[in-house]
Amino acid sequence: MQPSRESPIASLQQLQQQAWAILQTDSQKPGDVFYTGTLGTQSGSGVSLRTVVVREVNALEKTISCYSDKRASKIQEIETNSSVSFLFWDSERKIQLRLSGTATIHTTDILAEGHWQQTSPSNRRSYLAIPAPGSFQSEPTSGLPEGLDTREPTQEESEQGRFNFAVIVTRIQQMDWLHLAKSGHRRAMFRYEAGELAEASWVIP
Image (cartoon, helix red, strand yellow):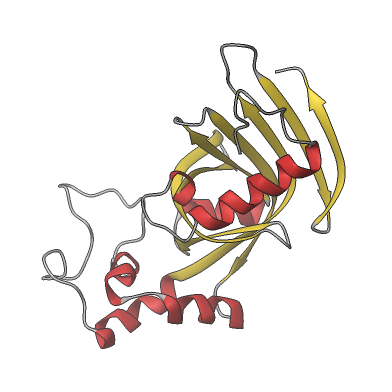
């Protein structure tokens, strides 16, 4: 995604294709730069930010998917205002990606069930918490049933978390690409309609 010093910068079309390709690749590899990102929603008190694991990127349809406990505040925030944003930062390549779009929540449909079947018992553990995320407690606690703090749930035990499981799918409508460089920063903006590139422009950083 970052051009070498010897080669000219990629065209706008190549640039946005490379950005989506890297997002899609990194979302499948734990530990890669874009495996996690910052998800922003609109809360009653302002913008609400949190780090999420990116579970799927569809470069063709321009969608980003992540998981949540359906009782979490971000679910209610999205139900009130479906406009969300993502922030990704690659410190090695000095690339920042800001993406914004419209989110939909899936809990009981085929899409949610398909994602649930792909998760392991260990990844399902967080959905087994008895108090809802954000519940105030008198002492530090995960909220998990007794014993599950120290061991992985069985397959049967993990199924109890299905009721709390939600998939957030965001259809991206705009991507802001920024490359920081000592020789001068570079920035580009891309706008999408129904998953298709509708507009691309170089922008002053």
